[in-house]
Length: 522
Image (cartoon, rainbow, N blue to C red; front, side, top):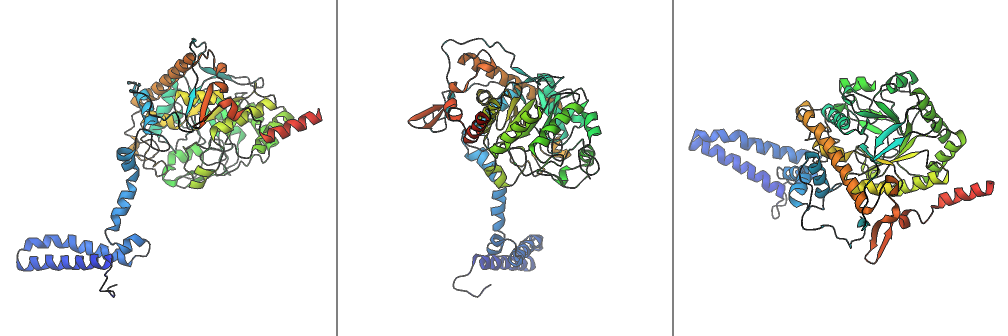
């Protein structure tokens, strides 16, 4: 360690300095004042810690820079906070900017929502989007709700065009789930349960969309397989308005789900019918079916068991041909789902490997447009409603997906912001500082349901009001009046295209091929 005396390493300098410091303190304690002995535990502790750093083999930084290396790990641990509070501008910040987060906070708190001194966005920058307004505004003649359920359904549901996205109890705390559900009750909109089953905190009066995932939580037998009797009993509950079969999600398509052992409490394990305090995995694929035809038949089976409530499925589009095959299976069997939830790759409420989050799955706008085109090709657009999900928080976000063919949408992270989420990016750690994505009582007990439920309802109400105001300014009397040719995107400094030109004027090659085959058969 001390061979190269001409060029001593930082490591050697630190060790020598600590040895010298201890010698100095010992000398002072022995020959000047015994009070110096009080410093010895501290200085000896520093020396021992530095020696431990030198002899450990896991961390190169600590080996090369004993003690000093800890500063690197400390600042790395607080780097998200440093960026968010000291470095970001209003338009920076990922996945949501400060400006986006602020509008949710303002609406949830029912305070001033206006901005001053003009736009901060650069309207000439590629990617900038806008909607054309009308010089003759019209009064909206619609209550911003949509009826879900085709002629195979007997219990149709009138849904708000903005609802709470899928987030399970277990991933979220009991106070967060209760706040969301009570907020849904106040505002008259639906609450998607997520795939973790229905807990007592979901049953606070709000309408539920029960999501069934690959783990069949809440309707699984002892072997983890789907249990028809259990499903029928839960689906019969009055507050369960729709059933959503989850095939995949935008945050991690094709990966399955993970509930860390720390979040899998005894209570949560009982709801999911799993072993408590163990890591619970949802498989990537369902065990009840393995092809499009069987999947559609399973959807029909769920609808029958539920008493003919609206049943649909959720997926993140990947292989386009597979979705075409699903539509072919619908045509073949005559079993038409009541809705399809399209989750964009932007979705982010599930913890996932980096590659799955950043590089797998189709973005929301492309996916909604493709699903809309495909349903039109098969003549299913009137029977199957499309629900869009993925990074939707503002009125403009909602209107864009409606223009692309969606009938309604989910907001998950928007609702989390209304609860007080600060985008700490610690959802998968179990230590969410806002008490939302945690099972630590010391954290979630700070989230007061009596206050947060009102904020959830406020956010929903103000966002719907903003949608209505935008529709009136643009001359849209009805939701069906919102068309893609009215929405525009800057492609480059000299080129602007409408959503119609970008997403609909050019028919997808896979759909062209399918249309050609249909024409040949006819």
